[in-house]
Image (spheres, rainbow, N blue to C red):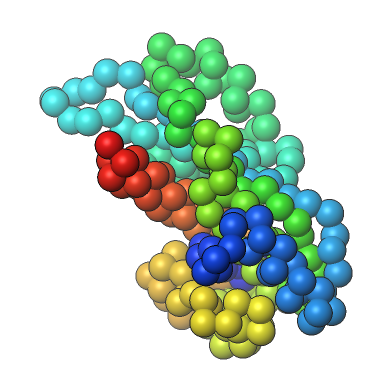
Length: 212
């Protein structure tokens, strides 16, 4: 697994989420990218039952990625995180007296994956409560595992189909010493998806309060 950037792409003016996704597909195909199946990343939120010293209950996020179907990732709010067997969900059911599933908080990104030379691109529709909430784009530069060595090249490629929506270097990389390899267990990628999903949840809360 190479250096990967995950970002949110705004819905095009006058377009729906699906129309914007279709537009991104068209731009990728015009570049010569080849569609190679689909992908899905999802995130379940669990609340720790009870709290001590009046502290708010800590959150546990259990995430799945279709790229690694035999495993999942459990990430505590503020750390740590661990990679677990795919049956970890079964364990969470047995631990329901300690962790309660916040079903209304489940978020997922699902869509098509494209291959373009050394790049792997995934364009997904972010859904929450069965409703489209936004668009995610994941770009992986497969040959390199050092963010500082390939970021300018990734930016140039992303500009070819994202235009002015090219993101900044992900914060998960900015805090690392120069030359540190991106881990092969996809922790950096899933951390970016978690940040994106948390942002979508907050946007939902804000829009919901506005309606009321």
